Image 1 (cartoon, rainbow, N blue to C red):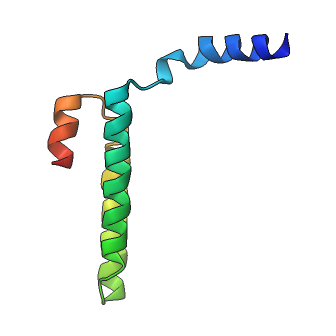
Image 2 (tube, helix red, strand yellow; image 1 turned 135 degrees about the vertical axis):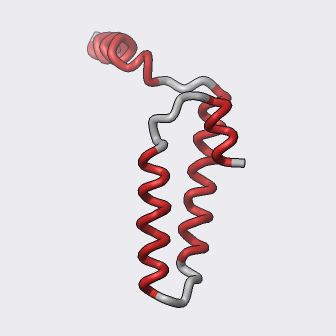
Length: 78
């Protein structure tokens, strides 16, 4: 009974938050790209440049985190 109540309350409140397969795969690709960029930034010798790049990348990804237009989204990551 408790499991039924939890699943029904989750289904009704979070239904719009689920991703379809294409969105899920794009999300994985973006996370992979983000991690790769951050790893690359660690190879920068100058600490000031490293911090600048880290902040810039972080801000760019945060600004676009709610992007839902798949065409624009694909253009940004390619």
